[in-house]
Image (cartoon, rainbow, N blue to C red; front, side, top):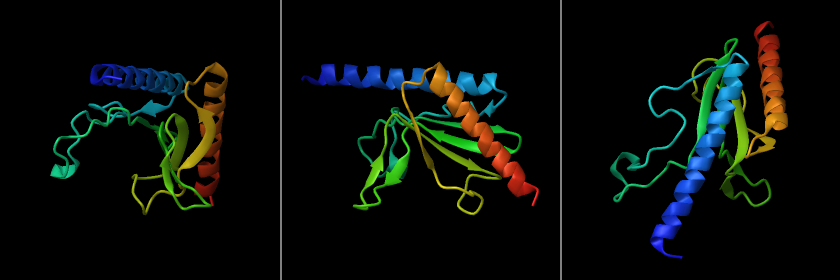
Length: 150
């Protein structure tokens, strides 16, 4: 495989992931979630330099996420959640799997109440699993409302 072919395939994959991200964003907005869309929110930079550590820069456009909120509950929805294998201790990014982190306040270690939940859903998202994902997020909102009332 030559370099041009490899780059073309990578660009197609990045575009396909962007379309899936947009599909989830639209689904969230249709269900009255507010989605953070400032600047290049939700996608990694093409020329990531790691604070000057990387020369040449690294292409992080394949890294996709969504920041959303509803009823005071914030969500970080990752399309490549991080997990650590409980048997080997090896870290992995589960590309195309959907991970959800729900929290109140700011997204920092002191305010996040839950770790990343690795869900059962993977890309591509369809109408049925999109509805299930929304139902799951709504259940998390209800859980936070119960916690907040205690």
